[in-house]
Image 1 (cartoon, rainbow, N blue to C red):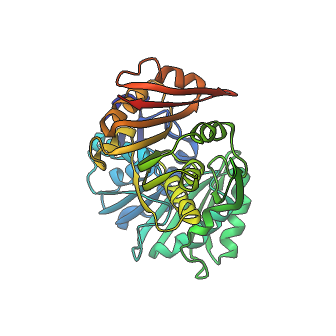
Image 2 (image 1 turned 90 degrees about the horizontal axis):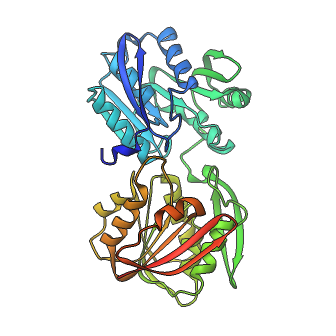
Image 3 (image 1 turned 30 degrees about the vertical axis):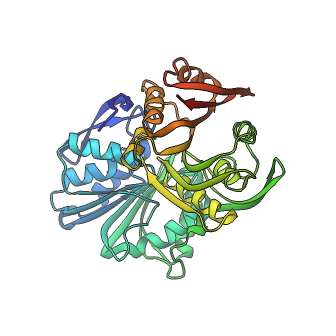
Length: 396
């Protein structure tokens, strides 16, 4: 893995007579230790299941890979393991930890839950369910996950205690059989089988609301999703960025990294004077890419859009030619201890055309670190607003 400075620490795990090590990151869930919910789930799997004949497992929302890797390492009968997360950095760390622990029989997937595994069956499906996934997403997952089980398979999930009753009632309403329940003050583990045939794959379960936004004499419609900001009103940060971009005519090929709900790309797609021929959407989060693409198409038809799941900003160079981008917009994601700021500038210098614009948006403090050195660029505009900062640079 590139960028080993993303590693925060390494922790041991002794599980089912297997000794493992895991690299953690401050950019990912549970950055200082193995999550207590994950540990609780793994203990129930060993205690309640006969693992001798388990051959296939599916770890959904894998994070750094603890659940899927611990089982695959300790259960010799496992021949196939799908390790999946919507965050491509999480998948990258899972790959790194698989290599660290000498585990080879793994399939890695950067996708939304239950996507990319059509017509496949697993002996165990496991997940430490994110607390902020959203009610409709949870209902869909709990109601459909059992349809991916083998005849004697079971789903094993852990969920935070405030959502436990909701999860349990959802399973019962879907016609599932709860095989085992274990809980403490923080978490509840549920083992179950069965599913509701009335639930089918549908991206609409991720939609939280449909809103109309007005900015700079432009009106646009957005479907917004759970667990991403700006779902009902424009944030100070996006307001600042869009105000700055309102005086620029963006043309040609435009790249957006970490686009959130898609407010800025959507605004630029309809803004008078702009002529963006192709949108390239990239970032760690598959859901951000998908909802941004969805919202651009909702407001403008017949437009070319490419999407890429990338663990690091400089990974976009694998999909774009040098000196080929007219405009690059980046919403920064500072990682403590990592040289993320040099990565942004070096990547932009590589992919932007001469005279191309680099638009950067983020909180004021890390932006200061980014702009200490701007070799190869000229700062065109720099604005601050309520703790946020927006800058446009031109490649020399």
